[in-house]
Amino acid sequence: MPRPILATIHTDALTHNLDRARRAAQDARVWAVVKANAYGHGIERVFEAFRAADGFALLDLAEAERVRTLGWRGPILLLEGVFEPRDLELCSRLGLWHTVHCDEQIDMLAAHKTQAPQRVFLKMNSGMNRLGFAPERFRAAWTRLSALPQVDEITLMTHFSDADGARGVAAQLAQFERITQDLPGERSVANSAATLRHAAQTRADWIRPGILLYGSAPDFPEHDAAHWQLRPGMTLATRLIGVQELKAGDAVGYGSSFVADAPLRIGVAAVGYADGYPRHCTTGTPVLVNGVRTRMVGRVSMDMITVDLDPVPDAGFGSEVTLWGNASNGAVLGIDEVAQAAGTVGYELMCALALRVPVVVA
Ligand SMILES: Cc1ncc(COP(=O)(O)O)c(C=O)c1O
Image (cartoon, rainbow, N blue to C red):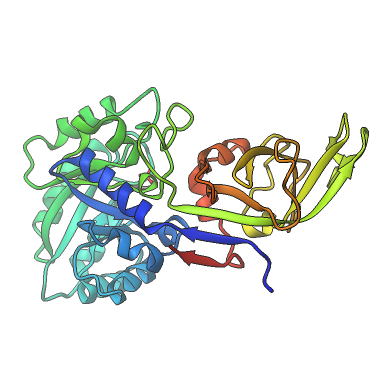
């Protein structure tokens, strides 16, 4: 009998979330961002749900090959572009579109021998200062690229640093628009937060939602997933494998960080940091037992956590424990709440799901 932990990928929720992006995008085409193995969900597991997208965006060439192996003939975009010259051969062979964000990538293209010119996304650094040409260098990059026989159409793109927060997108968008206003070509600027919060200004020709597709709110805690009508793409659940009756003054787990101030029933759940449950979660982190909301107490161990059974007196050995996602009784625990308790974001929890956790697609 394997340990009772299980991750479930919810195809209908992923489909619903993609639909949600499409509604926000109106006429824009939608890249389903599936980098990092579809944010930890598994590219093969989300493929059916996302095949209604207009393209798949990712950054690992091996992942691009996997999407083609699944039979996808439509667009695939490499969000970081190529890393070395021979990657361009793979782009030619697999028909990959790729981001161009630096001179070195233009040099590689200029030296590339190809029959068929390639479709590229020219990236501007409009303020995030991660990848992209500075605004004052963007037009020169465009001119150089557009003169290359290796290059087909050029789409203009940028990426927002603060679409989820108070700074918003206005300054970056103004910069992008100022520099590109008279350049031909399609545009792509919006990630999930821009798509949901700044739809009218940012939808352009292509949107690039990632996190929203998986059912996490890009701007939690200002808004939660339910506010944006998003549904959890993944449930992580396990069972109780033990129960302890604490007396007042008894402590739980490593470091005795939690001490009961009154008699307390504690459930021991088969999940730990070796499964991807964050060790930074502390006493009070929400968890569902039999679909009833309670709290984690004490420290997260490698293979176990301990939970307060006070609100669930009927719980015992074998009871369902939902770490995030949907409980059998229909209750939902948002991954963002758990992430917040660990001082991180839903993205990290999804991506950190450990290999040892069995996954089913429902
Ligand atoms: C260039 C680019 N576009 C889109 C996305 C998707 O972002 P999100 O998951 O916040 O929607 C990312 C993610 O980092 C990205 O780097």
